[in-house]
Image (tube, rainbow, N blue to C red; front, top):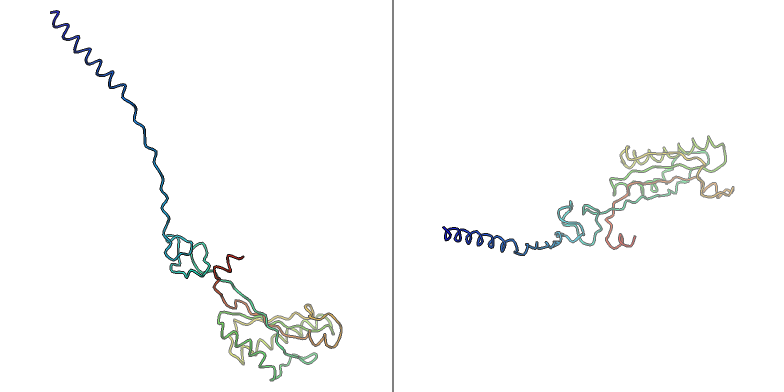
Amino acid sequence: MKKSRLFALSIAMLATVGCAEHSFIEPYTAVKPEVISIPESDLDLDGVADRLDQCPGTPTEYAVDEIGCHMYEQLAVSMELEIQFDNDSSVIERSDLDEIKQVADFMNDHPDTHVEIGGHTSTPATEEYNLQLSERRAKEVAGVLVSEFGIAKERVTFKGYGESRPKDLSETEEAHRINRRIEAVIFGVEQNVVLRESHAVQ
């Protein structure tokens, strides 16, 4: 009987010692993950990742926007036409057609353009009269662009400015001559691609 109890006690002690040894094993130390940054591809080297680039293949010398497309600068051109109206007249002489043709040629070369023909007068006569006279002059030039040179009517507008925008403020005959003028302001002239170097300077 004693031997049986001693044998059972020995087994119990062994079991206890085994559990104690297991509980003293060093705890597991987690390995800290290392984040590796992988650069995104940019095949056309424009500085915009391929996944965002909506204009792949852009030449490297061109400046691009945030979606990788060409950047454009839009210009406007103002032409002063050498049309000398007689005093108190809106009649265009045949000799003046070459001046108007310059505007038509430019617009034909740039089909996306529009023009405003502005009429201007000198100060003699009343302000109201000069405004009406300048509009008649502008309308005549606009009409020649359409009827003589075939510029689409929807591309041409006209406006009279009267004496409100003089170039010469002196009240001389020469000043009056200079102020009696027609100006053509052409909008949306052309879209020039912006080069990367010129964009960086700005």
